[in-house]
Image (tube, rainbow, N blue to C red; front, side):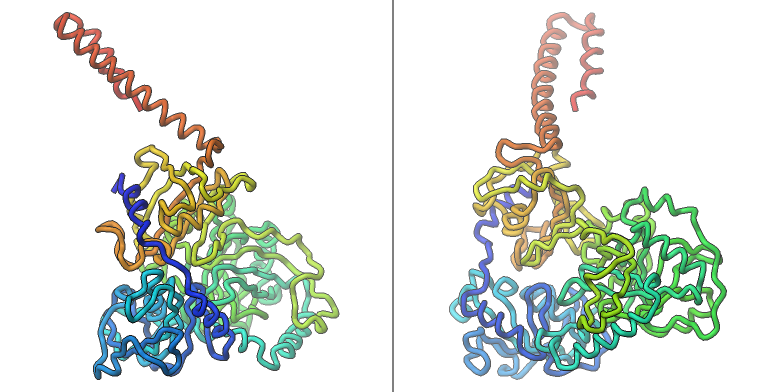
Length: 573
């Protein structure tokens, strides 16, 4: 709907969300360190009181029968409740997308029979407004909640929760000894065959981690050679895990730059013969392929033992020897299009990461990949595989995704100057295109580019949604990227008319054209073009009016004048 963002941005003045109050902030900080408390990247914290026996999660719009009770943090654990289905004696039915953001997130991680205690920050609940008189503004909420029955659509449950731990659990006794033992084992292996993958956008905390792959030339000499070739070329840097199916495998290996991918298009390698006793068990890595002798750049990691693949030509070339818990936390996007909800391989090949950043920004990805030497004394380093000697130079962290905090993420498509940043009160000139995060069709809600009219506003003054005030502040002049804005920093449970539903996460393709009187080259071109169009339009109007007057005065004999005017109209762009 071209032309709708300006009134929407201004109307958000009354919808700004404040962070949790002082008591709530301190409560959450202390709570996250307690044993068995799990922290979600959104800020939600929870503890599993009872694990259910279900095998599916509800979808966002799936009705669920639930029991719950809620308190503000100040009344936890046994003080006054502001609501309770237990006290009413009957469960309540609602879908994840019909409730506060904290519940929306939690319910889609639960299965039938799960009973959780949730600790929800204000920005994922009722924010600055609260729900007087029972819930004051800025209140952190504590809920006990259980899903009794999923009545609507379902999706297969993931195992990701088993690997997300609180700081207290991470520091459990015996951890250092385990790491040391594993590191000693690694130190005895040929260092040239150890490859470290640094991965970002993982599910749970921490959001980044690494796993180590050991290549086995004795298993698959041709495939092992290709893997080393790709690592040396830094092919995997910023590559997405685009097909990740729970209880099956995680596939990756399409480069984010289509021009790079085209260079490898005709470089298929011959198949390796199957090695007796070596199969697709959990943690092994094999080439993905389309038939005999079609192996190229794509690989998959087995989540489970997939022995059925062994007789189909999928010969493993290596295995994950450290960090399989990181692999387990890759985002489970599911089967690819058109069979499933994941991305289309054809569109990745054609458009690269630009397509994935816009449509699937939640995908986990490889930040960098390198061969690594393991020092002989690594056993005394507490299992630290970072630092020390490297065979290849470490690639700098990819500029692909920037975590801006509060759930905001910027997927960079074009770097800025890196030195000129907005300050509160600056007048900014922007281009943007707005889509809904959940809409995989990419339907455009609003776009200044469609109107060819850059959008201007004063940052930090509440003239736009909070996600813009916070996110754009961290962009530099000329930078362009996809700004992922969670509902809590957008239009929250109220939505915005028919265009933006309640609790909708948003995606803005934004470009910072100007800060005050400073403009990027694209900004100068855009504003100059806009001014030129205005001048041309004015001139054309004068010419047309004059021609009409001339025609009225001179009659049909001046056909060549009319012809000249008619020919000039299409060029007024």
